[in-house]
Image (tube, rainbow, N blue to C red; front, side):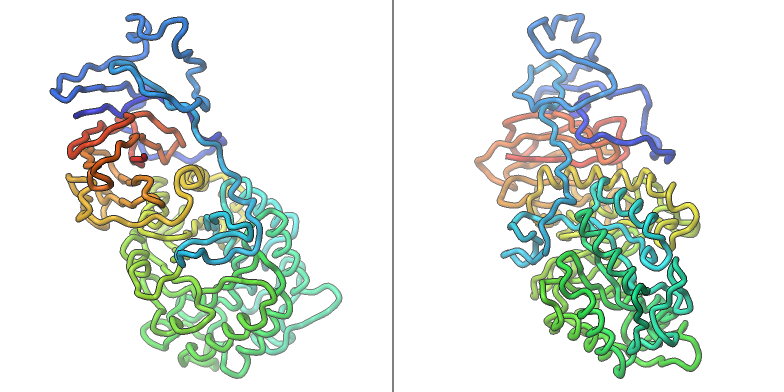
Length: 520
C-alpha cells in the first residue's frame, strides 16, 4: 500500500520573522503536491488547481483560505484522490506554566510538576547571565525564552572568570575564590542572584544553577573548590536558595572530576590540581540536605563522559547526565539503559553560531534535540555562541532560527508525548528499511509513544519513500499517519486507519528533515 505524504497543511505554531537561513529545501515552488498511489502503483499527481477544476471540492466541501497557511481543525478520512489538509492542529501548550516544584514521576524516568502534570525540560544555556546582565537585560532574555517554548535556564551562580564582578560591580567573595566567605551586604552580589532566580520563577522557568563552574580544563573555579570549603559553600547556597521551588542544582561544569587527561590543565598555578570528586560530593550533600523544598540535582560533566561511577550512589544525583557532540543518541541511550533508572537530561551538545569545527547548520542544531528525546531523554538543552557568554550580539541571537525550532519541538512534544519516549532500535521492525548509519544525517531516531499510543521517528535527511510495519506496534490496531515539519511546525495528513507490514508513504519533497507520527 502506498500513501502520499506531500500535502499542504495547517500551521501548528505561529513563527516570528528571523534572519537565519534554513538549509536549502529540495525545491522552492510552494507547498508540495500530494501523491496518492494505490497498492498497485500508478500514483497520479494532483495539484490544488486540478482538484478545484475537476470538482473535487464543491461549494459544500472544504474551504481553502489564505495560501499563507493557518491552523485548521483536525480532519476525517479523505477522499482517495484529493489532497486533505490536517485540521485541529495543536496549539502551543504553554510549557512555561508548570507548577513548581518539579519532581520525578512514578515511572522514575519522567518529570512532573506539583499538580502531577508531565513537565518537559527544554533549557537555554545563558551560563553567564547572572553575573554579566543587568536586571533589565535578564528580564528581556528570560521573557523571550519563556514565550519561546523553553522551560528552563541553565546558569552559573558565579562568572566563569573568578576575577569578575557582576554587572553592578559587586563581588561574590571578600577574597577571590574564597568560597567559604561570601561577601554580604544590604544589596550585594547574592541579592542579585536571588532576584534572577525569582524572575525565572515569575516567568515560569526552572533556574538550573551551577554553584561553581569548574571549566573544561579546570580553568574556572575548579582549583578553588576544596574539601575544606565545598560543604560550607553548599550550606551557604542552601540557606540562600533552598526554599526556592524553581531551583535545580547542576554541580561541576564541563569537567571530569578526576585529575586525569586535560581536566586540570587549565588550573592556575598555586591552586589544587587534585581530584574534586570528594569535594563535589560534600557540596552536593550540603545542597541536598539544606533544601526545604524539592530541588533536583545532577552533575555537568565533560563531553561524552559519564559520572555514574563517581556520583551514582549519591542521594543528590537524581538526574542522569548526558553531554554530547553533534550526535547525542548513543550517550543519552547509554544513560537510559542503566540498571539504575533515572530521568536522563542532555545538559549540553553543540551550539548554534559556532565559528569552529564542527560547523552546524540550523537543521543539524535541531537534530540534536530530536535525537536526544527520541533516545529517551526527559529533557535537553539548547545553546547559542552569543548567548552563553553574553556577547554584544546576544539580543539578536535570541531570535535565531534555531531557537524558533525549539518552539516547534515543544509544540510537537506537548501535543503528542505526555511522558518520556521509549527508544526503539532497528530490531523493533517498525521501519523495515532500517535506521540509517549512526552518527550521520541518515540516522533515524525512533521511539514508542507513552501508553502504547504509537510511535514517532525523526529523519535527518530525505528518503524517497518510507515503509512502515504497523504490526511491530500492534498486530490488530490501525493507525493514523502524519508528517510533522521540524522547520515550520506544519502537520501534513498521510492516512487514517492504516495497518499492515508494508505501509509505504512518500517523503514530503520540500523538506530537509521530518518527523513521522504513527498514532492510534
